[in-house]
Amino acid sequence: MVCRLVGSMFTLDDSSEAEEAFAWQLDAVRRHLQSLPGDSPELAHLFGIAQEVADSPNARSGLRLSLTAYAYYLEHEGRLAEALQVLGIATRTYGDAVPPSDFAASSLFAARLNRLLARWPEATNCYQAAEEAANAAGDRTLELRGRLGRAAVLRGMGNLPQARAIGEEVAVTASKEALPEMEALAYTNLGAVYSVEGKTVEFVQANYKAFVLTEDPLQRMWILGDIGTGLVKLGAFDSARVAFEIVLASDASFQVQNNARLELMEVESSVGNRMSFERRRAEAEEVSDRMPPSMVADFHFKAATGLVRFGQMSRGRALLEAGMAHSESHKLNAWYFRFEQKLAELAAGQPREPEPATYSDAGYPALEEVAVGLREYAAAIG
Image (cartoon, rainbow, N blue to C red; front, side, top):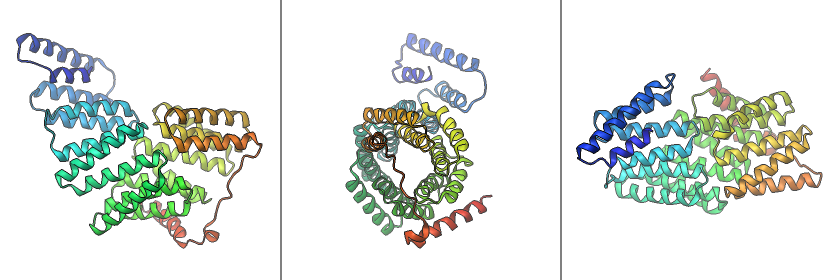
């Protein structure tokens, strides 16, 4: 109703009939909002948007800020398609001409939402548009963000060499130009490529570099979750649990917290704690309808792997088949092949589990530095 109200404002003409109809629509929307129970954050966003329409229908900057804030709220809640819809409406408040820097920022937002929804062509177009607009505005940070976004799309589509090349290029450029946050973001992108390639030590090292460089608290939680994921693969379950529990106790977004929840599910199945595994699995299943496509695939794979570890072969196989079908429908190629391989192992009666590495035999002292750093960080934040 609120989105339709804003849409009507865009097409409002100067006739008395149109103004009367719009006033009636505005009154109806506000009365409906007032009838809704509770004082949820979402209701506050909707009230704010309606109030902006009522106070200044011809002054669009306040309305744009309210709509954009609501879109961020929806993304935080995992409602990505709705966030994209509201962002589109917010962008229309500019009219025919959008300042290049604002256009770049909006394009990056739209690109991220499309990428999380596995809409690869749309995400690529948005990232390229953001780069071009940022270049026109002389905003180097936004330009590099657009370039890294294209790398993330390439990674999602399985083009790892090109994704890695872009990440390395941006890391070098950001270091030379003294842009530590962009350098950190480049390392997180490189870490994601290393993860898909199975280079776990490099994955942890890249993300730890990003963790040290970044100052944004929410971004730190995201990176901390990635570091925990790498530590799980290396068999450092105690350190990984510390990392994930810090994330779950933070104010991070739904996506970041739920990633930590899925990884804790993996930790508990790896150490043979079935009760904790089932508890984490049930928690994740309750919010599975809010997960973006790649996270749904991750949930299916980790839940299936855990069930197989506890001898629940039929349940595990069913989840793997569902995950493979889901990956195919969303063109998640890397995930599809992981499900296919796991099913083949089950069919052959040889479900394989990789032997976890340890710090000592991996031969990388930097990994011990990561473990110590996590303990110190946990102690510092209480």
